[in-house]
Image 1 (cartoon, rainbow, N blue to C red):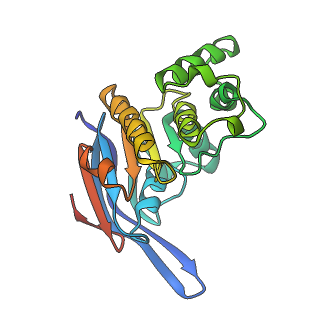
Image 2 (cartoon, rainbow, N blue to C red; image 1 turned 45 degrees about the vertical axis):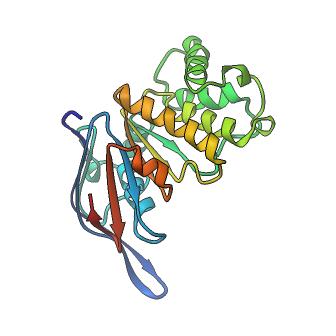
Length: 226
């Protein structure tokens, strides 16, 4: 692993709820190197999803500093944060979140269209290369509803890589997959890390944790093991 791609210093995150202030993360310090495959583990409510959402710029820290790919996120406006996120972070969801009216390849092209990171004439070829990388190039022109769960997750990974982000975050990405398909998806994450992408996965799955470069265990919003 090279110099840190992700640095959190004294980070806290709280939410106001009807029952009062809820501390999701507390005084958290963390460094993640470039090209690392990192598993964030812990029980439900430990702060896993909150942590990767802060790394991805999906949410903001209440206190402390979050620096990702050399950019301090707290100083960015909402518009600037959205632009940064589109070019810097790929996101893989548990429930795929593919648009049902777009074909598989059109779903992968969508982030390129939104962020305008490459000429329109090159976008389909780039999307096809990514679909080939995750092993479903033959599904390019099919709608998501015709794909299996594993194929949809592979498509979601390809979409997350559309703009060649240095960081990929995934929230329980194998939670809805059978064990064999989950293993195949995990192999894709491992290969991405080997190619230099920093991969951060929130997970309950032991297989992901044991095959990662670094395992960070959270409890009550704090790092309790690393």
